[in-house]
Image (cartoon, rainbow, N blue to C red; front, side):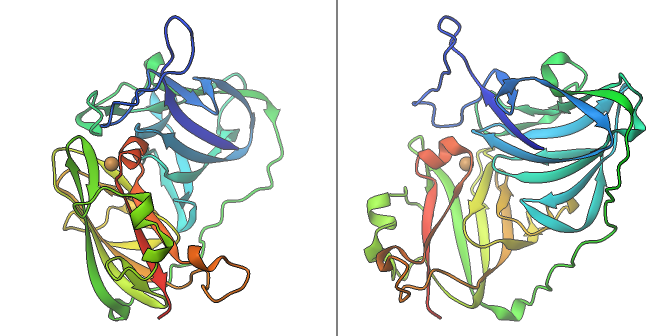
Length: 323
Ligand SMILES: [Cu+2]
């Protein structure tokens, strides 16, 4: 069951969706929706369900908890950013930034008929759009913080599904494969957003003529260390790198938190934060292959997935070229 989380704002008079083109910091809704409905409910049988959570933003992050009878209840996380974990993780909360995807299994067989559980949000967002307010947590039992209500119906049902104890281990990271270290800095300038001191320009940065642009060129079948660096201001950026997934080596100079240890394509960058990644570039549409348009081959983007930051130019193109 896909669960798509997005916050919306409606015009009080017309009831139409509202968006502020001139708010470059971020856009927060005053209504929380799941699969396009404001705080809906779902009837569930007394068995396991596999939910695929997706946070579509545009700027809102969440810390989800499953509430029943005044306490957090266990959930089983099996994927992060769409990739299976090495082993299922029993969790009582999970934070998700924009564009993150987690598969979460909830076993409703433990609850009686008529039970009502709530998927609630505990993460408070700063009203200025910079990111989350890390100083306090929301009360998950207030109606305003309940995103989705589960209504348990019926007698127990047969559920032959099993959660495996293990999935596949990740390939080991071999740092000697790295041929280059590269740093991407994420900054704010004149109300817009830059990567490495540049606003993205599709006509320049993504032009076919830039395919061999040596600035952001990576070689196929090599690995690199990428540092994503934020220069502060309290801004939080979910950085999404297209095409290849990476492994996080360090998070803000320290160990990678368990919650972010996985095969990732969204990396959480907090104010003054930095993440260090191991990236491998194994493939790309071959420019010599006849079934691809040569001029469009090998160009990929990375961008902030606070979609408002992205739309105000926090994006960069990198080109994968033959090794
Ligand atoms: Cu951002």
